[in-house]
Length: 94
Image (cartoon, rainbow, N blue to C red):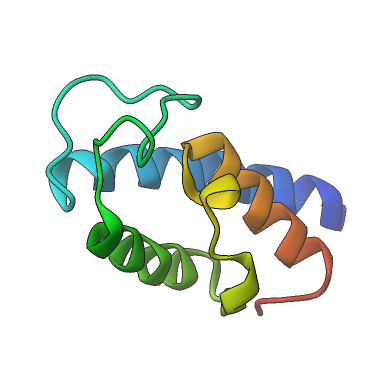
């Protein structure tokens, strides 16, 4: 499997895990699509964002630099996936 294909498969797994965790762990009510605004719409708050960052770090086995913890990177499942892909493509994770 090529590294790019492995990252793409990991992103699909990450998105699935995120959607599940948003309901089960973070108690988000209602449907969460890949483009649903999480923070901007009030589904999660600033404390939950920090828990979400920790969850994502565990899922991708890569630390997320503080400079990357922004609304632009964490306001939807797709945005989180793009950030994770960027970090993993840059050589982060194991």
